[in-house]
Structure formats: C-alpha cells, structure tokens
Image: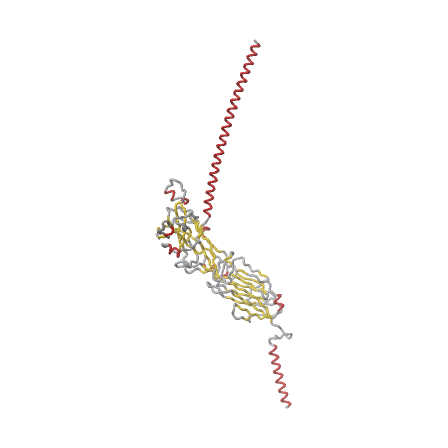
Amino acid sequence: MDKASAHSKKEKALKEKTKSKKQSKKQSKTKFKDQKEIMKGIKKMKKNLIRKAGAVVLAMAMILGCSMAAFADTSLGQGGEQGAFTTPDSPMSMSKTIILEKELVVYNADEEEINAPTMSYKYVVAPAAGGSEITDGADKHDPEGSITVLVKDGIGSPAVADGGIVAWEAEELVKAAKDGASNKKDIKIDFSNIAFKGAGIYRYMITETPVGSYEAAGITESEDNSHTRFIDIYVRLAENIPENVTKEELESTPAYWDIYGATCFITNSSMTEETKALNKTTGFVTTSEAEGSKAADSYYTFNVTVSKIVENDAYGATTIAFPFTVLFTNEKVSAGTIVKQGTGTTGTDFDHSQAVDLSKGELKGVAEIKSGQKVKYAGIPMGTDVEVYETNIASGVVYVVDTKVDDAEAVRDESVNWGEKPSAAIAQADDKASFESTKAVLLTEADTKDEQGHTIEVTNTLITISPTGVSLRVAPYIILMAAGIAMLIFARRRREMC
C-alpha cells in the first residue's frame, strides 16, 4: 500500500512537472510573439516618425522660401516700374512690399557732407478711382499684339512702414554739392493685407504731408510739388491654392493673390507704353523727363571761414590765441540745426552735436585762433546772419583792427573803447585787462544757391608807442612843424642883423 501510494505520488509529481514545462514553453512562445509584435510596432512608429519629420522639414522649407520672398521688398528704382516681362507672357511673383523714394537735394559750395535739416513727412496710401486704361507693348505677348485693360479702383488699406513717417534728423550727415546732391529715403508700402477681388490692375493714391513747416526747417519746397503720386498694382491668382476653394474664400484671403508688377505715376490718367515712360517716377523725387516734371525739395546751405592775422607783432602772432565768438541767427529756422565746425584752431568749446533753434540766436561758435589759423563753419542754412566777435586778450598793447568779409574792402573798426569792454561784446569766459570786440557781419539770402564759400578775415596791426608816449604816427608831423618854426626864427634873426 505504501509502495503504491508512493508510486502514485511520484507519477502525480511527474505530471505536474510536465504540465509546468508545457505552460512555461507556451508562455515563452507567447512572450516571443508579443516581443515580435512590439518590435514590429516600433519599426512602424519609426517609419511614421521619419515620414512626419520629412513632412515637417518640407513644410519648414516652404515657409522659409515664402519668408525669403516676403522680405525681398520690391523697389521701383528702375524708372518707376517693376515686373515688366523680360520674355513674352512671363509674369513673375514679387514681394507685396513696394518701395517708393523721397528725395532731398542738398546744396553746398564746398561739396562736403553736412548735417541734415530737421524735417519729417507723413505718407498715407488710399484707393484711387479707376476707369483709366493701360495699354502695354505688342512685344510683351506671343503672338505679338498690344492689350488694353481697364484699371480697377483700389481696395483695402495698404500699410506704410514706421507709421508712414520718413524723417531727416539734424544729427545725421547728408551729401551736398554745389549744384545739389541727391539724398533719398525709402517709403515702404505693404499690400500683404489686401484680399483682391480678381486679377487685374488696381490703382492707389499716395499723399505726402509735411510734418512741421518747410520754413522752420530751412527747406525750400518745390514750387510744382503736388504732394500726390499714383501707383498701379498688377494682381493675379496665386499658384497652388486649395481645391474647391469658394469665391467668398478667394475674396477674403490675401494669400490667394500674387503681385507681379507695380508702376508709380505722377498723374491719375490712362497710359500707353509711350506716355507711361514719360509719366513714371520712383516717388517724390526729381523727374526732369516727365510731363509736368516735378522737382524734389531743396536744402540750401553755405559755409564761412574765420581767419586771423597779426601784423607788426611777432610775439603776439606766435603766442596769443585770440578768442572769437561766432553767432548764427535765422529768425525763420526753428526746427533744430547743427552747424559743423572744422579744425585749425588751438582749442574750441563749440558744441556741434546738439540741434539748436537758430531763431533764438542760441548757436554760438567759440574758438581760439592764432595768427595764420582759421576755423570753418559748414552747413549753415541760407538766410542766416553770421556775426563774428573778437576779443583782444593781449595786455598793454593796442591794435588797429581791420575786418574783411569775402572780397569786399576791409573795414577799420574806429568805435573801440580801449579802456573798457565794449557793450557790443559777447561775454567771454575769462575777462582780461584789455578788451577789444570787433564785430563783422555776413548776411545771406534764403532759398538761393551759394556759389562759393564765405570768408571773414580779421587783421590786428600793433600800434608802436614811442618812449615819449607820442605815437610814431604823429612824430613826423611834429618834426616838420619844429623845422618850420626853426626856419622862421633863423630868417627873422638874419633880417635883424642886416
């Protein structure tokens, strides 16, 4: 019984072991199968990720490509037109930011860079009335043949960069020339927010408004400046737009429209190839060839050089730097002006970095000038009066002072009070025992071109004093008088002797 029981237990244990092995084997197969499924899933996920990553890269490339196009602003510097077909029927999409130009012509006899006037302009772009016709050239199409289209009314509200403000500041330098140098700034107009309503040519008007007065800036407004320009925008449907897009979607989505051309005109009228060439402009600039030509605004300036000569006084000529005060006054120019000071002095405290109201007579150039030296002031608005004061700091000597303005005859200052500081003098930093304030005045006319620079020459000639205190200039007359008296006495005595 015990043997049978033991055998039975043994068989039972063997069956359990076999069953356990089968279950373990089955679990291993199931686990392996699960692992294969997992690996298969991982591979599938990798493929999907790679596919999606490729799509992302492609999308980024497209976005970057679009961004590059968006930032390539379109300048109308090529005669007021951009987008003309280089080969027949070949329009090319361009940036929706169109650049016009504002020009300021600056005059200066010495043709050097000077400080700009303080002046701003504001630009507003609005839809203009259509109805005019545009006829292009026969060679623009294949087969050849001119096409005439009706210009549409502009739509929407294009945005002008920087709030529509284009400005010149006194701190910046501008080019200048005797016959005028051109200085231009961009007027950037953005049409990217416009959802156009069909292909065609849309016309807009650009209006210029000066901020402040021309007179206060010292600028001469062009007599024929109408302060308006017109720009035609050539529009077509964009490529690769979604399928089944509705008319409402087209007319409300700016991205569905491309700009492929732009032309700026002086007048709002119909144009052929011939008349368009005569009426085109790059903006508010000089257009000498256009019908009813326009001229840019002008800024007329002049320069003045103050020089010093000391004669009959070698010591003073080599050792004394005479203080000069140069006063600039223009009752009309109040917007802020900077006059550029040159070199050639022994020292200066002239602040030429801050714009000053010329109408208040606040601009003073203070310089110390030795004999043979000079100081130059450049970029002074025409119409400004220049007053030059010299103070004699040489103690115990007296000078005769001659001032010469440009080519005029020298003028001798006879009004100097040698004993005290004249009332006309402008206060210097350090009062000296002996004063002399010589005033020279240069007057200029506004709105005129200065053909040559101006000069103010101050010459100090030392008066030599004799040991007796009598000026050597009087001594010859005294000697002659004494000789005459002596001759009279000699003649009288001789008659008495006879």
